[in-house]
Image (tube, rainbow, N blue to C red; front, side, top):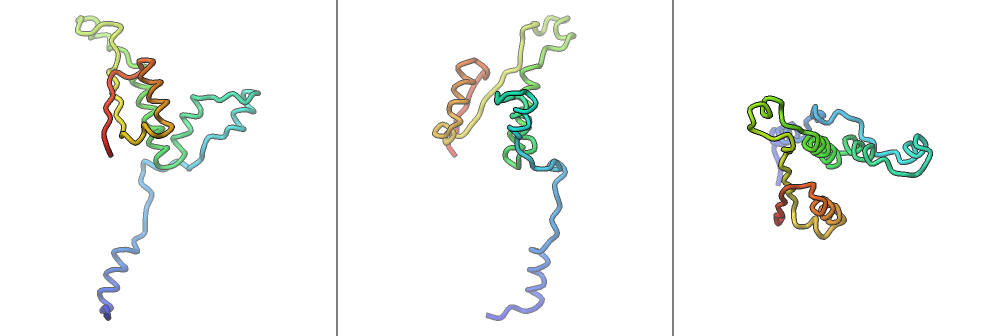
Amino acid sequence: MVVPDDSMKAAANAVLVKSSLPSEFTNVVKGHDFAEVAEEKGSNDVDYNKLLRSYLSSGFQATNFGLAVNIVEQMIQWRPPKETLDDKSMRPDDRCTIFLGYTSNLISSGIRETIRFLVQHKMVSARETAAP
């Protein structure tokens, strides 16, 4: 089968398009440097805050995980606004309701221990498992 030149040019123009980097992924991809942290601390103890923050620059899926870590930190630190305390619509000990959703295949992975820890220590309010 012979393809006309016009069809080849149209196909090439559609496929061979110059790509551009999305604005939300402008960080340089770089993983956690365990040696650097050990040097700073003078030990091999893991600095979990730095480890979790490093996910922001560890690549696409890890970056999304890092963004999720930031959102969870905001949720944990959230406190009711003063005006809601003044009008008694909220109590000082009210906190965010945190729903944990995950696909069932994560239970058969190493993530299951993390999920168990979060539930066991009441760090999530509700959980939802879905089949992929």
